[in-house]
Image 1 (cartoon, rainbow, N blue to C red):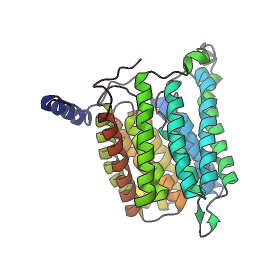
Image 2: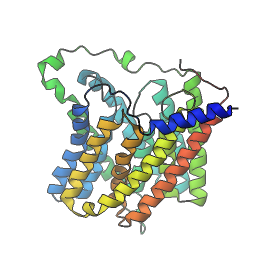
Image 3: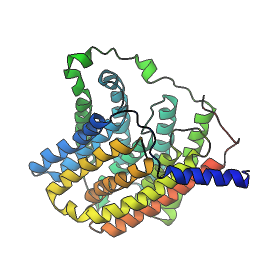
Length: 356
C-alpha cells in the first residue's frame, strides 16, 4: 500500500514528465528520414501508378524501420530479418483468422503474449512488442469480410506487406554503400539478441500483458466491438512498455491517454487533407518523421503524431469517412487499454521488481 505522500509524489512526477523532454541520444535526423522513406516512397510510387490502396498496404511494412533504429547498419542487417519474419507471421495469422471473430480474438491474445515474451526474452528493445499486435489487428481489419466478400484478398495483402518489409530492410542497409560504414565491425548476433531468458521483472511484464490482453479482448468482444479489440490490447501493451521499474506504467498511461486525446484532435483537424491523394502521400511520411524525432524525448508528444498516423491507415483501409466517430472510438479504446495497463502495474507482487 502506498503512503499518501508517496502517491502524491508519483502523481507530480508523472504530470511533470508530460512537459519534460528527456536527454536525447544524439541526432536522430537520419533515423527519422529512414523511417519516413520506408513508408513514404512505396506509397508515393504506387499512388502515382494509380494504386493508392496497394501503396498503403506496402507502406505498412515500413514499421520494420522502427526496430533497432539506433544500431549500425551492419547490425541491423543481422537483426531485422528476425523482426520481419515475426511481423509477417503476425500479419498472416491475423488475415487467416479474420473470418472467425472468436478465433481471431484467441489469436490476438496469443500474439500479444507470445511476441511480448519473445521481445522481453531477447531484449529487442524499443519500440517493444506493441507493433506485432498492431500488425496482427491491421491485417485482420484490412482483409475482413465486408458484404460477404473479403475487403482485400489475404494473399494479396501479405504479398504487399512482404514487399514493404523488404523495401524497409533495403533502406536500413543503405549506409553500407559507404566504405566507412562497411568498415564498422558488427557485434555478434548473440550480443544483439541475447537470451532467451526472462528475469523476475520480465516474467511479471509477461503476466501483465496476458492479463491486459485477455481482459481487453473479452470486454471488446462482448460489450464494445470485436474489430477494435486489437487497438485496446496494443494500447495496453504500449503502456506496459519495457521497463520493470515500479510506477513506470502510470506515467506511460498518462502519456498514452492524453497524447491520444490531443492526437485525435490533430487527426480531426487534418483529416480533410487526406481526401487529396498527394496530401495523403505527404502526410504519412511526415508524421512518421516527426514521431522518430521526438519519441525518445517525450512519449506523450510522440503519441500526438502516432495517433493520426494509425488512424489514417485504419480509416483508409476500411474506407471509413466518419473521422469523428473513428477518432472517438480510438480514444475510448486507448483509455480502456491504458487503464488496464496502469491497474496491472499497481497489482504487483512486491513494491519493487528490479531489472536483472
